[in-house]
Length: 68
Image (cartoon, rainbow, N blue to C red; front, side, top):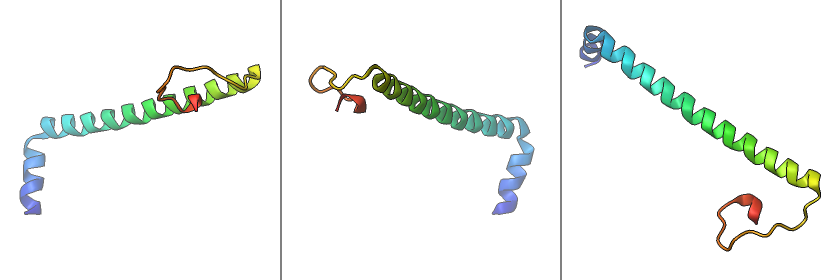
């Protein structure tokens, strides 16, 4: 069974490389977006602390953690 898999991977080299490249790009983008989101959130909280804001008025049902 493993031999059949390896033969197919080696026979269709371009498809294999493109698939691995696509998966790598997807993982990189997810990691980048998560990191950007965390950095933005930390920056927002730090800025609010710097301004000395103790109360923030937000619309009802606001899904952001900073609103709670």
